[in-house]
Structure formats: structure tokens, C-alpha cells
Amino acid sequence: MDKPVEMFDRDHEWAALSRFVTDPEPGATLGVVSGRRRQGKTFLLGAVCQAAGGFYFGATEATDAESLRRMGQALTEHVRPPSPYHFARWSEAVDVLLSLGRERPVPVVIDEFPYLARANPELPSVIQEALRPLRPQRTASRTRLLLCGSALSFMGRLLAGNAPLRGRAGLELVVRPLDHRLAARFWDITDPHLALRVNAVVGGTPAYRREFARGDSPTGPDDFDAWVVRTVLNPETPLFREARYLLAEEPDLRDTALYLSVLAAVAEGNTTRGGMAGYLERKATDVAHPITVLEDAGLLRREADVFRDNRPTYRIAEPLIAFHHAVMRPVWPQLERPGAAPRVWRASGRRFLSNVLGPHFEQVCRDWALHHADPDVLGGLPARSGHGVVHDPRARASHEVDVAVVGVADGSARAPLLAVGEAKWNDVMGLGHLERLRHVHEVVTRAGRYDTRDTRLLFFSGAGFNDALREAARRDPSRVVLVDLPTLYGVG
Image (cartoon, rainbow, N blue to C red; front, side):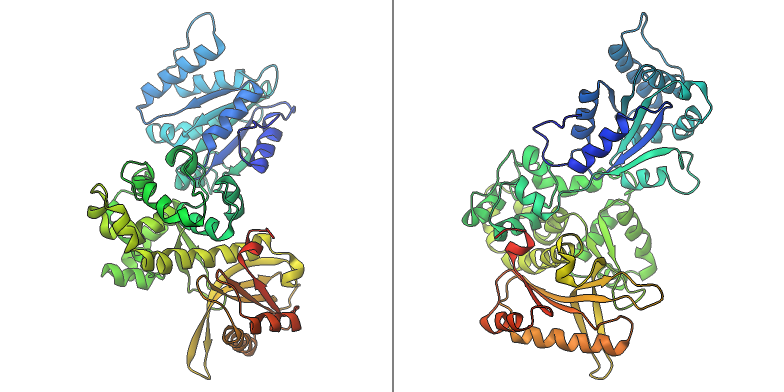
């Protein structure tokens, strides 16, 4: 199938869906598509149905009877049978969906499937029964049934454990936000410095440019502040309240105030469970459940410490939510007043730099090391990239490592520590940073957990490097690696 010309990227997702829906093999098959809201899943699946002559049904929050009636109306309009469809139960509707693929492979999409399943929890079991291997309605069909949903916690359970549909799906596709490089292209930004600042605010969610900002993109570095004021901080735009709506739309987040407070704690730099509990003035056990729920919803990301087991930290997964809690939520009453945004933004520079831009830059550096860096630069293929805290027992001190890249262990040998790195958005890096990383490398070597014989020292900077550090990198290019913004973005 030809991808629509107006669809930006999504080449991998389109290819996976194309293979699935055009598979000529007999027998109806099931696919599951999930992803956070605003990522373009509906546009993607609607385009698939249009390209392949399929059937699309978008579920809404409704009673079971109303949803069945809407399904009957939609199928009647699509099939145009001699008499309209009136379904008494979902098993009848599913069999009609299977009948659509009697003559050829046909995509059948049920979007926002969690709405239907919440109204009728037996629906996954109904679909399981309809897709029994030897059932005639299944074997005579080549319907490619795609269940789609934005409720990540629900969609994650759909194929897990003892769930009815476990083992039934032939496709499990997650539609993720655009990474920092694709996001820069999508926003038509060629300046890496500007691209990363915009990415720290709105991330890689496609809808935030096209629908929410109405195509408004900064015209250049000098337009960034004005762009923030006229879009994200503007009460007249959907972006202004989007972070709040993302929480309200998650079905498993019932006590919204508690979840907002947990996210606020993380935005303030309290990234451990104990730190969050202290911020909320509660016991650590009291925040365990909301942390898990936010993780399942894709709003919090758990990051293991590369150097210390059982010491995870948590990061807000959606940049717009991090920006909201760091910059907007503390002064919300002011922002709601017309014309207050310029004044608020001028006074928020330090919070934006320390609580939003700095942490986001570090995360982009970790993502670059894992997904974009040439293995030759790192000395091997990375297995994981993260951060960590190195404890130095001799000096009775601890050292934070912004980027730590671990390679693949060879048999029973220790895993190689491919690289340790430091990321500074606003600092020109020099020999002091080099000496610090060399010391960290020595401490990690003494600990003996990783093979550190070929560990690279990575330096990430948004402000550049001084001549002394550049000379050190020239003298020892296999050990000292400088990564600037053009390198992060694959330009220049």
C-alpha cells in the first residue's frame, strides 16, 4: 500500500500494518495497536482502511447497548445489506466483521477499544471465542482485525498473563512519539539549539504542532520566547490545558490530585520514591501505587541506576507535562489572566533551565547513545543507556553520571561499560570535566562490576567545548569523545 503523502514519517508503522493487512494467508487474524494520545494512531489506521478498502469504527464512551447500535449503523452504511443490522450481542457483530474478509484480506479497525471493553468486560472473551483456530467463521475469513487504544495500562493488559486474547494476536504495534531528530524535521527547525529547546517543551507528539499550535513553529532562535508565550502559555490555545487533560483522560487515574502531586514532586527534582514521599509528606509505601499507575499510563518512566541495583529513579515521560509542572502549575492563577504570559515567562527562565531543559538534554543524550551513536564511536553495540550514581568509598563521596552506556556481555564475562558521559546544556566544557570523568572511571574500575578497559569518556554540551578539551580529544580520539548539538541531531 502507498503511504499517504501528507503522513510524516511513520514508515516503520506503515510497513508493519501493510504486511499485516495484506497478508493473503487464509484465516482471520488479530492485531493490537497502542500508543499515548495525540500520536496519530487514528490518522494512521484510517489511512490504512482507506488504502485497503477496509472498515473503521471509532468507539466512544457509551453504554454497551448504544455502542452495539452504533456498530450496527456503521456496518449497515459500509456493507449496505438488504436490511439494516441490529445486533443483540457482540458475538453477532464480531461475526459480521469476520464476514467482511471472505473474498480478500480486509483491515477492520476498532479504535478506542477500551471504551467498549469497559462497558462490556466480556468483549475480549467474545473476540477470543470468535477467533478459535478451527471455527468456520474464522477459517473462511481473511479479516485483519485491529484493536486500537490510548489507555496504555488497559492495552498492556490485553495480551498479558492470562488475558483472553493472549496468544491470539499476530501484530502488536506501539505508535511512539517522534524522537528528537524526527521532531525537529516535523517542526521544520534546522537549528539544533532551537530544536532541542522546542523539544523540551512539546516533545515529539505530532498533534501539538498541526492541531494544537495550528502550525505555529518558531521562525528562528530569537522567536523561541515569543513562541512559548503565544502557544503553550496562551490560555486561548489547546496546548495551555493539555497537560491537565492528559491526566483526566486516563481511566485508571481516579484521585487526580494525588497523581498531580506525584508528578509535581518529580518535576521539582524528587526523582526517587523516598524523595517523592518526602515532598508529599507521606510514607514511601503510600506512593508506590500512584507511581505504578503513572508508569502503566506511560506518564512516568522508571530508570534503573546503572551502578546500583534497586535504586531506580523516575522521570516524567511527556515533556509537556514536565513543562506544565515546572513552569505553569506554580503560577496557574496568574497565567489564566489575559496578558500575563510574557511577565510569567520572563520570570521562569531559571526554572525552565534547571527543571526542564537541563534534564531533557540529559535524556536526549542518553537516547542518542542508545539509538543513534555509531557503535564504532562507543566501542561496541550498546545494550542499554542510563544514568547512575558512583560511590567512592575512599573519598566518602558520590558522583552522578549523566550518561552510562553498557554493552552486551559475552557469555559469563562481565558486561563492558562502553562509555560514561557528562551532559551540560549551558556550560562550556573543559579539562575539569575531563578530570572528573577520569576519576569516575577509576572508581568504577575498582568496583569491578563492569569491564572498563575500553570505556569511552563522552562529553555532551549545548554551549561547546574549550580549546584544551578539544586538544585532549584530538590527542586521544578513541577515548575522549565530544558530542555537540549538530552531532546529536545528525547534521553538519
